[in-house]
Amino acid sequence: MVKESIITFLWSISPLGEAKVGIPYGLLSGLNIYWVFLVAFVANILVFPIMMFFLDKINISLLRWNPYKKAAIWIARRAKTGSGSKIQKYGFWGLIFFVMIPLPGTGVYAGSIATYLFKIERGKAFLANVIGIFFSSLIVWLTTLLTTMGVA
Image 1 (cartoon, rainbow, N blue to C red):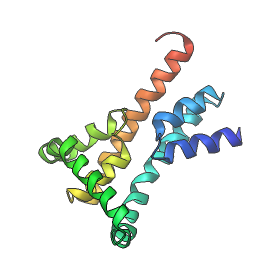
Image 2: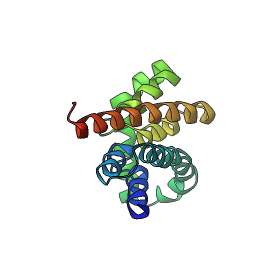
Image 3: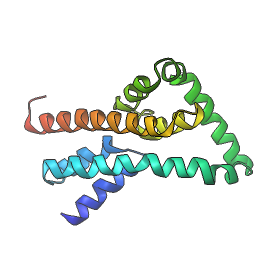
Image 4: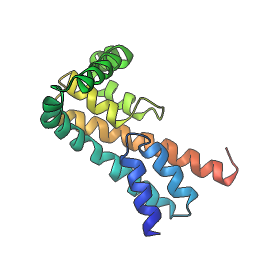
């Protein structure tokens, strides 16, 4: 149980999956359904402060390194063209919706980058990310539960 909980947590905090991967892993590993939701949700929430610290403190130093700078500019352009107009137009609600959609390229990592790029107030952005993470996790959790029960 401990090993599966740790792996669920790590998948949920990882940019490769977030809770979109952590929840199915935990449920398919036989963990308690409520425990899986809690572990994945908390891990995904932790991404926002970690990303804000990274973007504020470490990103500036890494921008001096040309390969990193090229990658960062590519990500920033993609974020601005992909969903930037909607997040800027709808603000708080746009950020919630963007983080809430359980698809690749959305989620708290992208929401954190949008917060940084569009200079959204951190307190509101954190709340929008938490609400979006909750609904995204709920969608994935319910879908996985129903699928494993043979309902969906």
